[in-house]
Image 1: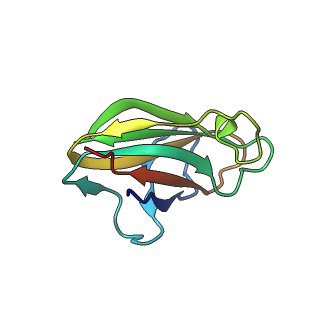
Image 2: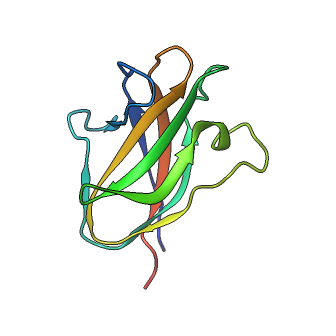
Length: 121
């Protein structure tokens, strides 16, 4: 049996729009990256809470310092939207970080919940 692990990540209020910065884990706020020694997967990603009206964010998963195609947009990962886009992605062994940028609105911090699962072999 595989139990999912849910972690909350926060993007601090940015200094400017469209500038990517590392998200930090609420469990370890001084850490902006994490290392996987086994294959894992992101099962879902959701705003926590939803940003206020007019605020838009983009989140990108980085592996070993490089951007990956795994992206999420705050307007598509709302917990209140029926049929919202579910972010899913496989993560092989390596060093990962979530980076985010605020794309619109007054400069404000935001948080997301990420559900990880270790696939059965």
